[in-house]
Each structure stands twice: as C-alpha cells, then as structure tokens.
Length: 64
Image (cartoon, rainbow, N blue to C red; front, side, top):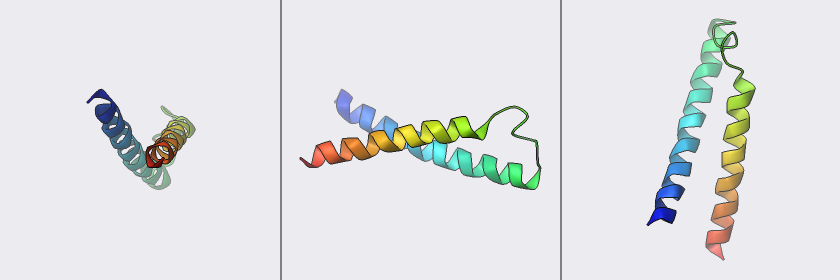
C-alpha cells in the first residue's frame, strides 16, 4: 500500500516537474530575466534528473 503510494507520488512529481520546467523555460525564452531573477532552472532540472533516475532504477528492479 505505502510502496504503491510512493511510486505514484514519484511518477506524478516527475510529470509536474517536466511541465513546470517546460513552462518556465518558455517564459524565460519570451521574457528574458523573468524567471532567472528568482529561480535557477538548473535546480529544477537537477531534481527532475534525479527523480528520473530513481524511476528508471525502480522500474528495472520491479521487472526482476
């Protein structure tokens, strides 16, 4: 039960971060400095990458 909840939470967080990064990158493209003045997009991308690696490793373990 709790393992399933954590799995769903991680997947949803990955989707949210993907959408957020795309939206923030587009905003930064159209209005330079509007996002980077407050938030470094590299941090969002780093968290997104770490969660992606966790998802891939979890899927590989689940297949065994």
